[in-house]
Image (tube, rainbow, N blue to C red; front, side, top):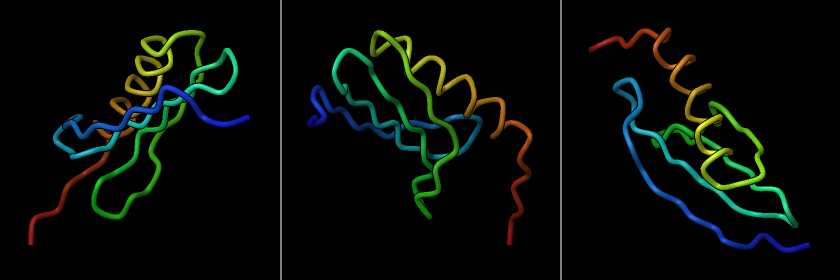
Length: 73
C-alpha cells in the first residue's frame, strides 16, 4: 500500500510550533503531530476520516504540550 491524500501543515498548539501530517492507507487515515524544531513526534492517531484522525491527534498533543514547561535562556 502507498499513502494517499497526504497533507502537511504547520500550526501552533499550546504555544509550540508543530507539524501536522495526515495520510490515508486503505480506508484508514493516520495523523502525526511532531515538534517543528527537533522533529520529535508528540502524538499520533487513526480515524475513519481525516478530520477524525486529526482531531484525536491534536487533542492528545494539546494535552501533552499544555503540561510541558518552556525555559527561556
